[in-house]
Image (cartoon, rainbow, N blue to C red; front, side, top):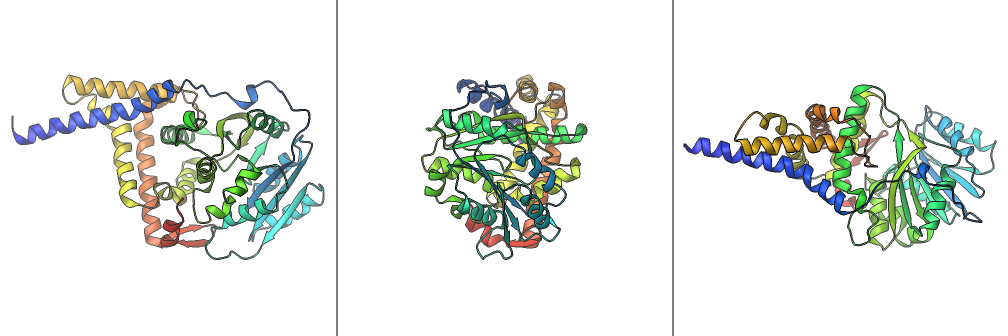
Amino acid sequence: MGHHSKMMIFMVWSFGFFAMFAWLLPAVDYLLAHWRPIRLDSLPEQFPESFPKLSVVIAALNEANTVEQAMKTLLQLQYPDMEIIAVDDRSTDGTGEILDRLAQTDERLRVVHITELPPGWLGKNHALHIGGQQATGEYILFTDADVHFKTNALKRAVAYIFANRLDHLTLFPDIDLEGFWERLSVGFFGALFSMHTRPWRVADPRSGAYVGVGAFNLVRTEPYRRMGGHASLPMDVTDDMKLGKRMKMNGGSSACMPSGPLVRVRWVVGLRGLVEGLTKNMFAGFGFQAPYALAAVIAIFLMSTWPFIGLFYGPLATRLMCLTAILLMMATADSASPAMVELTPIYALCFPIAGVIMQYIILRSMFFTFRQGGIVWRGTLYPLRELRKGVV
């Protein structure tokens, strides 16, 4: 057997081994955790005798198309002691006027207008920092300007965090999806997100797993301020995730669960919307380090595409590895992991396509970041050097 043939066999073995274990290890970890995601809406309503005061903080920059309907769902919430702080972050499209008009109809809503961004801050992080400083509630919910809530959503969430003595609760919202491409791409992204963040380990104080989403980060105010609030992550693009990290690093107790229909968001509109939306922050997920991003591109190829190639190429043992990887993909697609869109197993057969899309997004995000010398977020350029310093 020639050197070239030996090298090819070694590569086939290596690729098959990696593909199988990339799907197997998270599945085993999930099973060993003995944890099953419970949707918040499926729990019985067991409310405390009195609810603590809750502050809801929203940052909005040029959200005129979505903010009014989202705010109306907040204003219809059935929560006995609540204030809503909407931070208009330098909007130029009428967002501020919409918020001011809504504030005239409900005294619980207070609007803060920001006209300038101080140096050393991302716009959204600064807006959430300002809102968090002005919050007077025992708990603070940080949410986005396009999230819709059922009327009893916050009562259920606060009752859960209160009863379980949590410092931080993340709810994974229901994501409104239309069509095959949105479901496939968001579902595949959710699978990778779950495998990376391990939401089943978030509640374990011995684990380094953490999570957070912009749609619903509910924190207890005292530990949030003790750990520095959003001033502790002024330039981190993944501020929602890193809020969960900071809370847990500072001894806070965390948990995460799917919300069911209690919290809902139209996260992306079409495949193009997903690509453009993730281009901004995908490279940030790798700490703006090109080697990590390129390694992820290779890993995604081996996880999503190679099993379908290796199934028809190489020794029997490596083919069985690839078959095992495909079966694990199908099991993952069919799982009820809270951080992903639930898919039917048949979607796993299209994961090679989803993998190519995700690889393209990573490379596109890295390319645009280097070409621009940073990221452009809602019209503001944030230099790459400062972004790297700000990674938490």
